[in-house]
Image 1 (cartoon, rainbow over the protein chains, first blue to last red):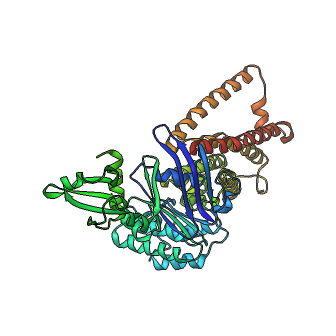
Image 2: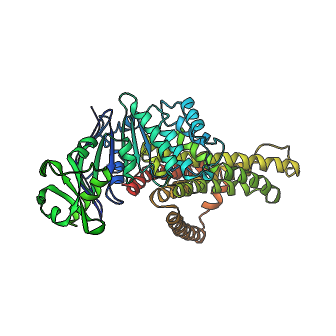
Image 3: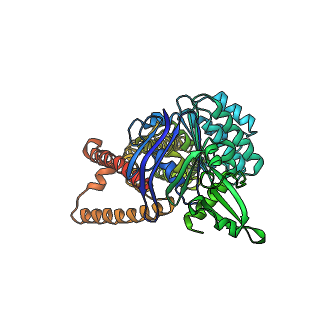
Length: 284
Length: 215
């Protein structure tokens, strides 16, 4: 079963359109949703959580449509972390726990307390006195304390220092290791996604440019480094995108199946693939 | 729904305690009107809860959690009603206690005097009506805008009511006198009926306003 399935989903706003997005996240996998600010990541997440309605297409999350009346049942099994922990700032972690106990049927107070202890979060301190890292850890503690099967994370690691980010990514990895657990994580910090994800979906200006298994994506591409003349000699369809490097050279992302086997290519990072894809789309 | 109400009471806890203290102190200096002020303040409490929500962007989170629109809307009304009745009770208790201490009554002390009880019963639908009147505005707009819209609407309402009262005075209609001094069965039931009708309209209107704001 797919944890998430978007089929031809469209949502138009006055100045932005999420256009015909088709994306599936199979159960038990981790999908990274990448894209620049304003690419449509948050819109996609709001759509699949039923916070806004789609203009067209079909959405299914844990087998239920967000437009259906029983979608609240599906939400019981979804842990959500947004780019900020939007809890009222006068509340304490203990009070947040109390509210969530009344919100989620399978709320596990012991597990929540354990997460608070693990993240060293004071449970009596008002939320407004928390640092950003602490706030996000509280949001993650809530998302992981009600036996969720699916985690939906919208820029959950944005603005955090590398140590906290690493700690949080590790927590997500632990979650993903359990059977049947799936994650959709949106971020523009691609290195985080590279550590965690099985597949990468790339949204650009409201369009899904690709969604592919991470290893296959990296295997299919290579980084070419050479002179401008050498780069020009490559087939145009082989070059995804290129940039001038230092000392008059050229760095390009190429499709391995469209260049000679003898050409020496470096393995790209997900960030390379994304940056060059955007450059290619812009015709740079 | 209980979770959402609990959240609101956690958020408003400090304000509630502070105002409870103010009610008690106020009774000492101005015995008689504190119940009216307290329930009117209770009507404003949901506005504070909305302001806190706005500041923390709680509504963004709320949309992602397993709450229905009706739970979200009704919980706020319940917070308003509970606060109203709570403050009413506290105001009345304080009123009686102060009256007792100052030997206000000539007769043996009872919980409510006849007149006070009647005034109190007249205040409840007024406050409930005001709450129902304000809620769709809170649900539709952010804290700043809703404050402005609510004030504007109240001014219009007051002008209309003032006009109505003036008209009744000119025509010698003893409606206002009856409202606060007449028998319950004679004059208060229309007030309660009006408040109930207003509430019955206000709740679906708030649900619509909330959906429209977040669509």
